[in-house]
Image (cartoon, rainbow, N blue to C red; front, side, top):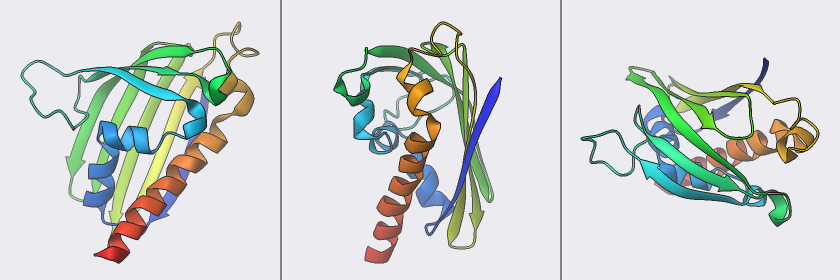
Length: 163
């Protein structure tokens, strides 16, 4: 199993960063255009009416066609854990079906005064047959997660300045 981790400090409150990251809109805003992401369906846990929040048990079916030319990849992501407490928020998703043998993505946010420390940790395994064929294996995680963190800063820090 391999692990990728990226950490950034965001000049926005924990509440703002959390609210942004814990929604489908946040997922779409933080996915680089070159990934060609489309969210095909969202299945909520029974009895949960809020259509915005990614709560434990939510399943998201997605497709991606990187750069518009790579083969389309489809997968289902499931929120397996979600926690909110004083000074700390997190949610974790795993891949139920898709191009990785294993995919566990933990999104952590720590409040630090008027700022937030954002940490993405991905534990993953590529099936050996896909290691050479999967565009993410070739391109790597770094550009995607660098973009996600830069977008978080740009969208939330600019919003904080405007208030």
